[in-house]
Image (cartoon, rainbow, N blue to C red; front, side):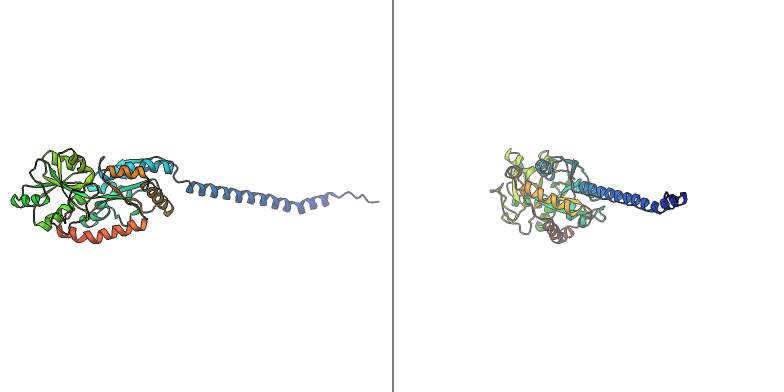
Length: 349
């Protein structure tokens, strides 16, 4: 009787036929492992992307400490830090009428950790004023929200002997070349507002630019210049202290903070209306998700009663709104102010 045990050749053949199946199982396990790893990596990456912010956020102010955008930045950042769960750090980058800091943010990475709070000049006017601007605020910066605004206040030193805007104009006409005015920088609203006033009244005064409104005010107090039309936050403390006299406000309506001070129109000079506004912007490549989140959080902060109270205390009014509303507002400012700027003949290299 033959043995039922398999021969050596049969055993080898059996192993050979089973080997491919073992390899297939091993390969399948490897593939499943790789798929799981890919899924895990993708999930972690996705989570990291949606976990913004996970480190401090920089809010660049292109003017000096104490300037209007610096003041509103510090008021808003305090509450914004709490809502975002990360510090919002203020960084003052001064120079070139606000262009230095604004250009820095325009060239920054759109990773959600660098933002800008800037004003009329660097965000709109300078595109017309400068022959060559190092950045384009309409393409390299992305609107987030219109944070706030305030009227400019035309003021003189209290011992100047000038009691009204009409008297200032009369004095400028009678003493041509003897009047200087300060501003917060070349191309700022505090310059262009006066330039428009000069055009409308056929008067002359020399422009002396400074890097912030406190310095522009100090120039008046020291007698280096005779007048200025600068944001209320810089003027009102000196008016209340009796050191300066407010002559008129630049807005279409009287300021709630200066109910006894006339508008330009009420003072007898029409067609001179403007507002100093401050907008928060992001680098152009910043994602819509981050911009929308910032917009929502800042609007929520601006609506807080204690924030409103602090802004009112600095003679500022919160505005807020959507990204698209800010974009439309900037384009409207460009349409309105372009002929004004060209009419003054100001060109900056």
